[in-house]
Image (cartoon, rainbow, N blue to C red; front, side):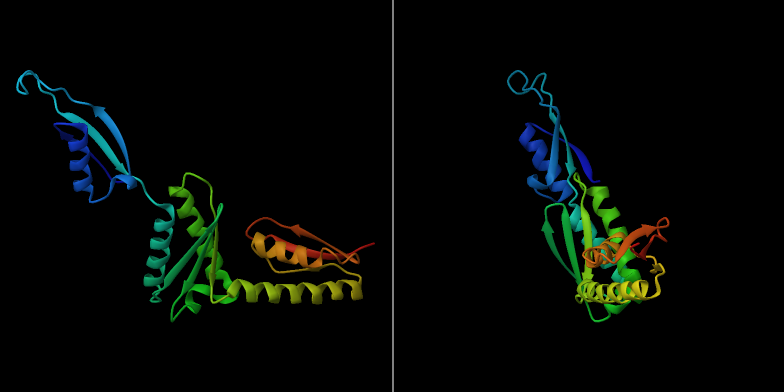
Length: 206
């Protein structure tokens, strides 16, 4: 957090001085007037300068983008980041020549990055934000794969009469499975285990 304490003959002058030192604009800062100052007799005797403390407001989305780009650089995979905000949901779409490095096997790198980016966002944000990270429509393709997997394993559970356990998945992927099988009254689904090993179990209805 950048902040400076500045003085001037008036509050406005002190603020201008602080903004110049911080190289920023008034709308990106919080201003705290410590002393409004005092004009002395004939402007000479008993004069007291105005004192202000100016703090730069940190933009949580900017910090998140900066974090994602630094990870891309460290992996040798420079990226561009497109951001869309929808209420408390913030969607980051990554693109770049070596984007596969940031997706990883079964999206594991992307999932980890999503979790860490959410931590960065909420460190600087006044409101809790939910971060969604995507790259090359991976989420859409993954959802389609999960739905096909869910339907296939549901049929297996019905055919064998035994419960089927899926691999551990993040909560939003488990939700895709639950939703996909919700209308199938021949089976039931529930989550079991503790994070990060929490997984879905598909079991035949009795």
